[in-house]
Length: 170
Image (cartoon, rainbow, N blue to C red; front, side, top):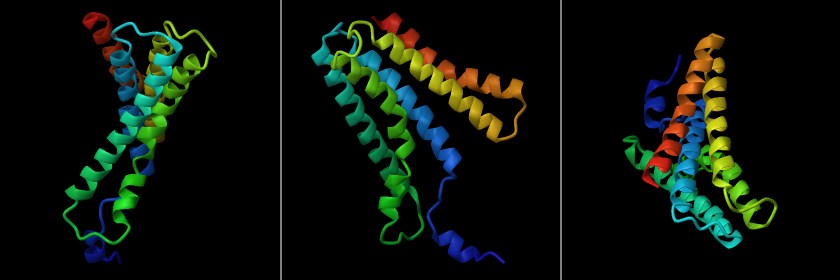
């Protein structure tokens, strides 16, 4: 028999798949948005791309901390000593999702590829990550392939919306 009183006193633990999907989608959309915002004024030097990579990481870490903190204080149950750190550690998928984009931007800053126009491969990378997260998560949930592809396409549309908004706003 499950001890319901003990379960009620524990903070809600997110399933790993749920955390990966949420953090991955949030992080990928955040990365797209940051790349769009940071390249708005046409700064495409190597120095500016390293700056962009650093700001992307800072923003991801701040978002993860804010989200983890919000989860922690939203729990109405009593907390144990290390619950705050566990809650913050659960936000790793958000930070992990921005790392590929940070590498693309930093790589342009280090001269691995041209700094001018690197936002387009970054957008494509994040749209691909969004599609993949939707597809894999749907398959984990035993959805049929057609439904999984549709869900992946809908997730990818979140990135496409950012790209279109970036083009319209510029």
